[in-house]
Image (tube, rainbow, N blue to C red; front, top):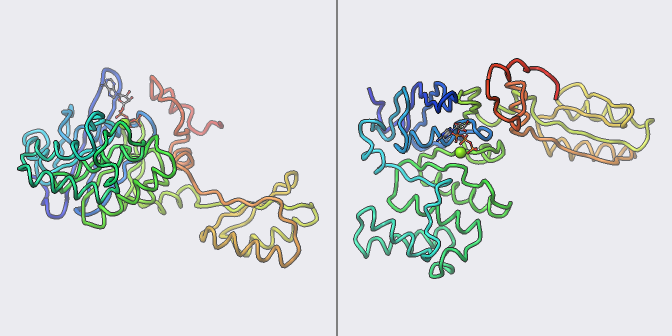
Amino acid sequence: MPPSASQVAVHAEALVKTYGSTRALDGVDLEIPSGTVLGLLGPNGAGKTTAVRILTTLLKPDSGTAYVAGHNVITEPDAVRRAIGLSGQYAAVDENLTGYENLYMVGRLYGMNRSDAGARARELLRRFRLEEAADRPSKTYSGGMRRRLDLAGALVAEPTVVVLDEPTTGLDPRGRMDTWEVIGELVADGATVLLTTQYLEEADQLADTILVIDRGKVIATGTADQLKNQVGGERLEIVVGDAGELPKAVETLAAVGAGEPTVDDHQRRVTVKVDTGPKALVEALRRLDQDSVTVLDVALHRPTLDDVFLSLTGHSAEDEPAADPKAKRGKKGASR
Ligand SMILES: Nc1ncnc2c1ncn2[C@@H]1O[C@H](COP(=O)(O)OP(=O)(O)OP(=O)(O)O)[C@@H](O)[C@H]1O
Ligand SMILES: [Mg+2]
């Protein structure tokens, strides 16, 4: 039974896809309530693009079912394609055409008449801050501009579900911020978004719910805060100038932190878990300054995807996928 498309935009159950002996997807379930953003988070080779390709009808699963906007991806691929906009890892942009021509062409491909396709192209160019560059060939665009054009292309036909495969991978920080802003606007407009990423920070910024996948399996689900709490949240670190100042530093961090501080006498470093991030950092520095403690170094460590991975699987996100997954699992808990 397909779920009600008005409430659940994407619903997938027990998706399996194998390539020879590689289980790219090994029984993945996922559900995206309408109007929300699901972040599919995982390292290289986790199975993100495979999931995206199945949900966008570009690839058939070996088994399992999926519905997008109420349509079965296997038996109603045309209806699914009409409901989605897809961007990323596919290079849909034609370099020799201008930004305007690219978007106009997409509109015509979707069956819009000339005037509607032109109006829609102009509207999207404005929205993605590409107006000034609209009439030059897109090969002259920066990476960030190209990515925005690609995103705009996914929105031409006003899809109800937008699928973005690693929208910011390879962008510089500025391009990443720009792209986040545009995705944020999409979401504010009520789109349902499936977004894949290798960055916890990105999923944190954009997603209502995060699904962490590793080697074709969902290994955790939750909000960014829930995942971070699973790995122990943020840590505040202070290095003091003199060993004699350590007791005062420990006392201070105990007061602002959310647990027992740990001390590294040799490095004169005190570390504590914090719930309030920068606030705790500011408060700790204020108190230490008041007590004339010399602070040589201070840092707030936010958990990264790698921390989440290490905590959930016992292996780093950067480990090469093992030829034989069982052999790799055997190393669980081993130190890096
Ligand atoms: N056409 C294919 N033929 C053989 N193996 C494939 C094919 N496509 C994907 N794979 C394998 O399936 C697994 C999942 O790949 P997938 O592209 O879905 O990962 P991903 O999470 O998108 O990674 P990335 O972050 O690098 O894009 C990998 O081990 C990959 O090598
Ligand atoms: Mg991929």
